[in-house]
Length: 363
Image (tube, rainbow, N blue to C red; front, side):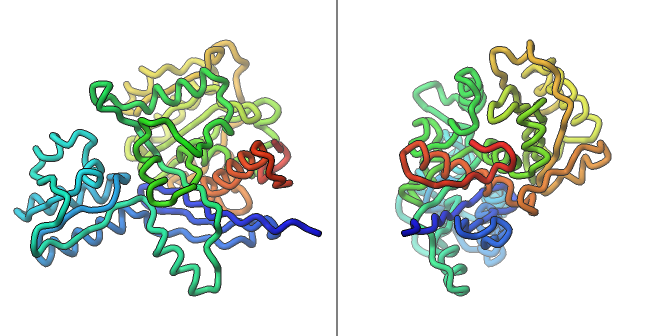
C-alpha cells in the first residue's frame, strides 16, 4: 500500500510579497499550487493608511512582525497628528526596545482605547490563506514551513541584535544549509518565535537560507554547486543576499540593501566573495548590512560560477550572471527551499519522504 502524499504549506515572507506554495509529493513541483501575494507588512500598511485617511486612531494588536511598509505607515499616522496605541508584543514591530517605541509617540497598552481601529499584526494571516485556498477546493496542509528575515534581539544582552553572530555561528559549525531549518529557533530570534505563535508546529528558516536551498532546484546551479561551487545572489525587494556554496555547505555570505545595489557595487562584492577576499567591513563600507564566513573561507579555491535570482534581478542583469529558475519559477525559490528543508528534517526524524527538490545534487 502506498503512503499518503506529503502536503506542505510553504510561505516565504518578504518585504514586498509573500510567496506561497502548496507542495504535494505526488505532483511535479511545476503543477503544485502557487500564490505570489502582497506581504503582510504591505497589507497592514494599507489598512493603516486607510485609517489615516479617515482620521481615526489605531491600536496595534497581534504579534511582532517584519516592519518596512507597516512601520512607515505608523510613522505617517503619527505625523498626521493621529493617536497610535499598541499592545507590547505588536509594538516590537516598530522597535524591540519599547522605550524607543514610546519615544516615537506610541502609547503601550494591552487594550485599545474607545474609538480606535484595531490593526492586527503578524507575518502570516493563515485564516486569509486558508479562505483563499478553500475557494478553489484546496484544503490547508497539516505541515507548514515559513521563512522570515530575523535580526534577533535580546534585552538581556544590552539590546543587541544577533543576526551576524547567528550567521557566523552557523558557518563556524560547518555551514550546512539543512542545519538552518528549525522546529525550535534560538530564543533571541523573536520574529521566528512570533511566527510559531501564529502557526503552532511550523518549521522556520531564514529567508536567505531558504532562497539558497531553493535555488539549488535549478539543475545548472545544482551541478555547479556540487562540483566547483557557486555564488548565489538573491536580489529581493528590500535586501540582496549572496552566498558562496559548495554542495550544501555555505562558505561565506553577505547582505546589502537592494536600494543601494548597483551593478558596479554588486560586481565588486561578488568578486571579493568569489575569490575569498571579502570582509565584513568591506560590505559595511559599501552601505550593506555585513558578512559572515566559514573558518577556512580565505583558503578555498576561487569559485567561477555566479547565479542571480529574486524579483529585482533585473537591476544587475547587465553583469551577465546566470539567471536561476528553480522548477520554472524563480519567485518561488524560497518556498521550494522551505519544502526541501522540511523534507530533510522529516527524513532525519525517520519519516520516509523519498524525494528531494534539489536537482542533480540530492541530500
